[in-house]
Image 1: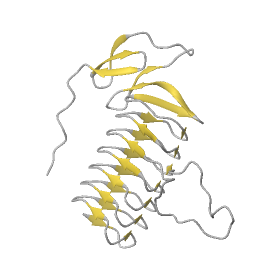
Image 2: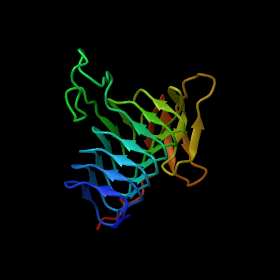
Image 3: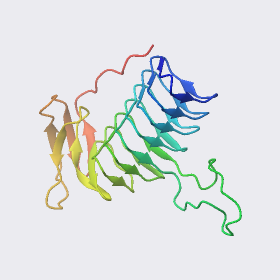
Image 4: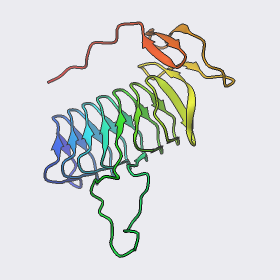
Length: 212
């Protein structure tokens, strides 16, 4: 484990073996980080956030309560997660500051294993980003992203399909639904069946990542 001397790790946070936390990062109480993660400088991980193993969080990332990142997720620099569809600073009479603690308004966000979120994205709440999905840089995600899908834009729109390795398998063209087909990644050779937005792996996936 490597913790930069300027990082703030609050009591009650859990940091897994081999994880590195860089300068001025702040990890709040109750957050749980797995093994061999990287937390970039100036990033903020709020209370009770759950993070799996071998997750890369670049610099200036804000992860709010209610977010779960599964194994192998990458969150690029400047990304912001949200967790409230009706945020207010105070009660309706303006007489009391609302708590930042999770409550009945807090919405959950799940980022499934292997997914990548590009730089400077904004991630809405009450949604799931699927396994090995790819969110292009600068996107604003307002609805769920299926497994192996590529989304880009403001708001994010479906743009194609991606391989486990991150290479684009197929682009979405002319607003037409993709006909069923089998395709092979030209970068790594893994094969997939794509049928009306559903992606199925035909090549046996790689062996599970090692554990210690």
